[in-house]
Length: 294
Image 1 (tube, rainbow, N blue to C red):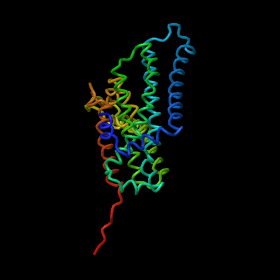
Image 2 (tube, helix red, strand yellow):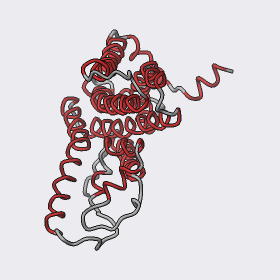
Image 3 (cartoon, one colour):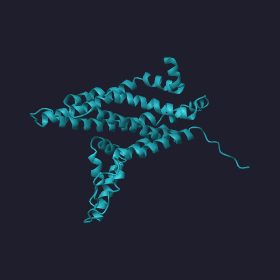
Image 4 (cartoon, rainbow, N blue to C red):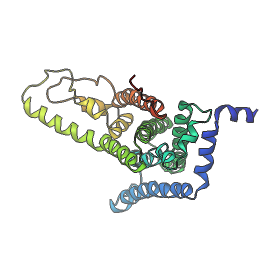
């Protein structure tokens, strides 16, 4: 029974990727350094809170909640740092090793090849994220966080991995060199994390200055949709739903509630973009024959 299930869900491409990825010493080292980085963030926050601040009351639930926010955002940044490196070379690497043509001549379809490469890369990233679960036990030890919030955060991690991974596979398919593909994927990721926030602040400042004195003339500020493209802002809106209201509430708006939560807008937009990236990767992984004019 188990063999039948394995043969049904794990194709030769996916099985090979799983075996090769875990045979290298780099995989356990990557997990070790990842856990070390997250652990230093958590322990550093505990030290600063309990020692340097001179808090006599110890570590209370409100501080535990802030620790959860710090760990979650730090982990999201690390995911954004590692995912492009895992996905941006899955196709271009095969092309550079001159094994892509052999792979394309097998019975595996383009869809199977692309999805298998993406799933194998993201499965390792998912393993790394799940390995951090014991660190979150510190938060539950002091209270302030519900299991539902933790589940939503990890679900957001998986979605972010899928989005960045889809862009990485697309660049790896379209571009011939792995280095260029990696740089392009990191560029898009940097724009999502930093560029969208800078653009939001810049545009919002211009609107506030141009509409100074006009109060309550609009339902909400449209600039909130720009910040909704930022993964960190979307993650914060998962923690605090009121954050979305504050983003859409500008000087000229009479907003009572945001039209949509930031994480909802983020999910809708990037579900479409990720699906489009995967479809384009499937379309262009095989050489396109040019039609010759008669």
